[in-house]
Length: 95
Image (cartoon, rainbow, N blue to C red; front, side):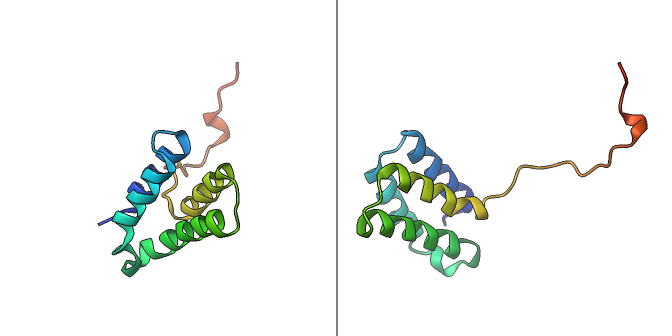
């Protein structure tokens, strides 16, 4: 079953040129069919489909497609871990 991480990695591979548009499109078609039934994946996959629709029917350029795909998966990707520890003034070292 497709995961958000796999989808994000595939978009990144396409955007960086490690995967052609045809390869990405075939990969997405092969891997996303069951994803629409999974709540965590359905919105991300629908966003990728929307980006493809814009490319094929609105005739956006391929660079614009790459940006749309990045924007399609970004809201669903897990953010990097961020420390929420508060910093106290005594923690800051003076030179």
